[in-house]
Image 1: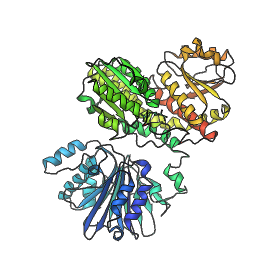
Image 2: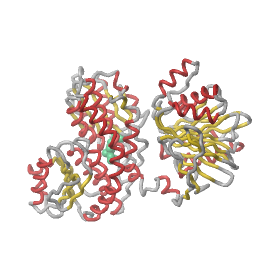
Image 3: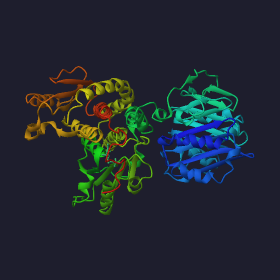
Image 4: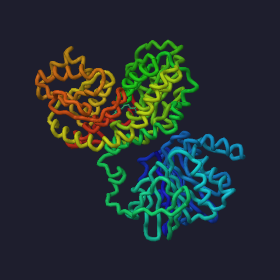
Length: 605
Ligand code: AGP
């Protein structure tokens, strides 16, 4: 996701916009840029990297003269972080500039049509295509508002956009579809922005624009219309009561909580453009053979994603998979045989040293390496033979949450994709795809109650100094992840264990002060897990049973969550585990977003 802001009013516009971008940097920081009207021209100034690089460039520009401006801070989705891909993007005729947050799914076909009409492109972005589509529409519809609307009706996907015209530099046009855009109403000034913090110091009067809204505004006037026919639209003006810091977290106490609740959108964004006519589209993989053996290599939470994904890759694509911790893989003579092997490295940051080392070892052995990353242009994304981007948006909290959700989604899509290339069961694939597409709504509905139950149980077990997390099958990796979250956030010792392994020694640890959180979801192993719970309770161990609605296992505390067909049930269990560790850490007064001793990306051995 990216951050956009537009301003028109009585102040110098560029400083207002730059300050707004600073408050939106949590949405992305690969590059930034501004546009503003000056002496009949439209100035566009952009810089790769954080906002400071742009400010350095602006220091030499006459930016105080313009009272209308717009800006963008980028989280790359199409095109690596580079100045040529930074927003704003101009139309070929130089008359228009646009900033955009979202993904235009059909930009390739629009681009092909425009190329045929003689347009040239200087970036790999979908945004530059959109601004030239508007210019093309303007040839037959000189009224820019109507040309803007005509172009947006052709664009499929998600967008929050702001547009400026060289010939009318004090007017802003803006629109939203499936991406946030808020309209700010000041005295003799107006704002559009991806999020409230961008203009909160200037006004608390806002209109939350809705999908299909188009806005035209100047310093003293504004109109909100419907995309399909430009009919006027009326929305209530609301007053924001948040303080600034809370606003950057969208009103959540911590970035971690915000990112846990972003998981429904992460799934929506991850599916965007990747399912067409009942088939999975992963063009990133089209040029690679279907692997005969897949070696997944990763660290921490990403390693747990890989362990979870193995079940789907083996069951849905019938590909033998082994999963290994990167720091182990890199120091043993792994039996990568070359032909038929593929290595998949999973890394949110794309910079984890051990995982990057594993990638380089595999490449030296001539084995194709697929990257699964969240950061465009990261070392792993650049050095892999091919890369799939999770598009989860920046993950600010050190504890990884939405990134794992996005990794699991991509692994499910990869399993279905390779399954369809291996002539897998089309009906089963259609059923799984339909389930994945239903996840965002199901998860969004379940999260509030899940959060409440996590809060209750965290208070009840806050005195524990040790915890077991137990699971079987696809719940075993989730048990490992739940334990990692509790450890790294609340500093309580927690151990994820295969439930069936307890009787081979660890059960000696069980006593009333050593509780177990047991993942007992509806699947073929449920009866076995119930037996393991009985074994723990028989030794006076306390048990929290994380199970599905309707179940009545014999446990000290039952935590019911909505059922999903195995193995996709992990998408519902994961946030429960995340919320439990979040509430425990917050209750114990820990630094939730930046736990002690940790870093967001471990770029050293
Ligand atoms: C996750 O909560 C941890 N902070 C950590 O284990 C992390 O998953 C690990 O360092 C791997 O990071 P990566 O995904 O960026 O490679």
